Image (cartoon, rainbow, N blue to C red; front, side, top):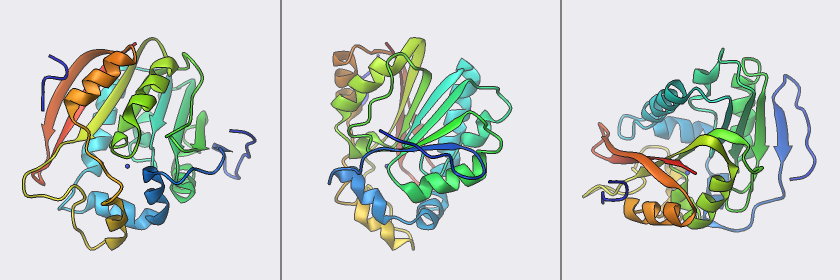
Length: 236
């Protein structure tokens, strides 16, 4: 049963394609810690053998896209665009990728805009950002709710789901004897230690139900590092 188991206005089109919209500056909230993590450090940390999360997340996204075949897709907390490559050649009507860190978005654009002509990159604070109602068939949210007011975010994403749309959420689960932010040589990631709050899957299920979402699937995925993810899929 679901819930049973216990990272605006205006707009410019940068050279090279890939529309970029910049929302108002973020407030001083927990997710703002990411503004102090360089893109190179973030990518190296996520790919480090002690972490090993990049490939797992890209694989989960590829699975979701293959199973659902969405035409309009929203990626919340897209970082530098890990997994966007799985959308190449799918002739998607709309791809929106949102992140707070402008340097991450610049890298995502440089890597993926040419192959994804419908890609729109939005710099925004996901603590407040609200997409259009009924706009997306698939919303992807991986390792993001640990930095946000999850109840508020789920209500906004529920409104953004199209009929038959799906919201995919990936949470990091607590691991005995391990820090929430794994220690690696990339010490800038330590700024996240005070910002990250793990979300209990039971709390996720309760808040999702309050937002009008139905849980269709949930599962635990063990990582080589000894940590684990909780994947949940919701429909409006």
